[in-house]
Image 1 (cartoon, helix red, strand yellow):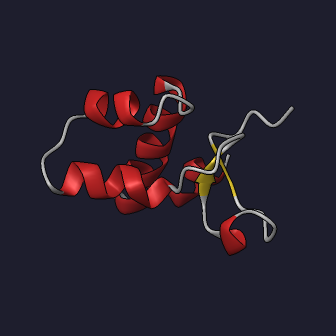
Image 2: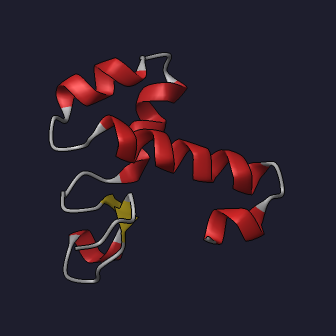
Length: 74
């Protein structure tokens, strides 16, 4: 079983980054946060995504934006 919080598969939404084991695009979480919605709002609307997955994706994005890309790849 894949422990990664997100996945890209050409057979799922044309390779769009989705939360693992779901068809929920990662970009949807970013869109929620951009307009001021809370993480809990997103999780309520997309119950197939776990809090751990969402937090892991946000942490990876934070590391990439902070320039810690080597850590984000781990």
